[in-house]
Length: 435
Ligand SMILES: [Zn+2]
Image 1 (cartoon, rainbow, N blue to C red):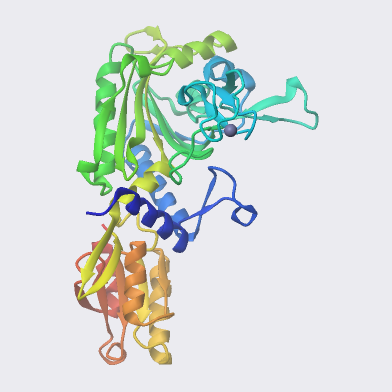
Image 2 (image 1 turned 180 degrees about the vertical axis):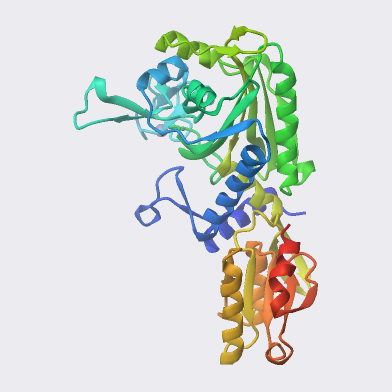
């Protein structure tokens, strides 16, 4: 069995070597807990988002999409409770200047260097900025610490413009920022991250039923996209763990090499947020139910997932090493919809212009429907291994016979089985494989 840290090291190394994830500003020594997605990383991340959006916004008929701005009116964060209570208690080392969460330090000594520590201070996790040319109190703004509030403040806009009736939800994907102190484990906890969130508005009294439905729905989503069920679990929060706005919360956790950790939280946020915004803005945010002639503030069920964490979990979960005829083969067994490259076209001989030209023309034809690539930079064996390592589901090889029989070889990533397919049938073949 592989050592756990060993697996994480391999993922970190693969991410950098094959262009999935790079450290931010690496040539300057890096920026702590901020990451960049490389050419393959941006593809898998886009595919995760696309899969989530399709499942929730397109395939259901009770959810609308939204893309709210990162910058919001500062009063939003007063109403949400983030100005007053989104904070950690921190101590600083007077000697090495390192900062620690008070709960992680025992005694009065720095755990790193033994230096003297400052008194504990409250530290807000929101990133501050100033709008306009002058830095003054009135221009203070924040980079949003969660995407949710952009949905709450647009609740009535969406109800009115789309003629929606409760129950219905609003889905949003976007960046959020937290000035995290404890960081680490690649992209698992970063200061700039991306969320996929739904605020699902329901009639009070039906909230517990909807909460349970969403926990099951979201668990099933990860499984449908190929995550192994034995590496997933649901963990219900204890009363003392609940956020200030939540009546109940269940985390969907993944068994990362560094331990079980949260991928997504499904919270029953009650009417907390809409009530807060109603009070502070003095706008009436109640919903009027035409049929029952009732007026009420809806309860909200919130499935809130981290995209960066999901990408990391999908990569970890699909990573495997196999032995093939005495050689080691590294495979990312990603779900086809998540794979960064869908089809690679490889010429068996790169010094035969007719073969190269046919391979390039096949790639060109596939590009309108798939992320396809042409590669002739190594021998065929090496090219297959490289594609396996980034999770490409199909490789098409053009050989000498292709020139006369007008057929190519299609190789399946997982079974390594090869099919001989007529060039003019490739598109049809792929439609069937990717449906
Ligand atoms: Zn110190």
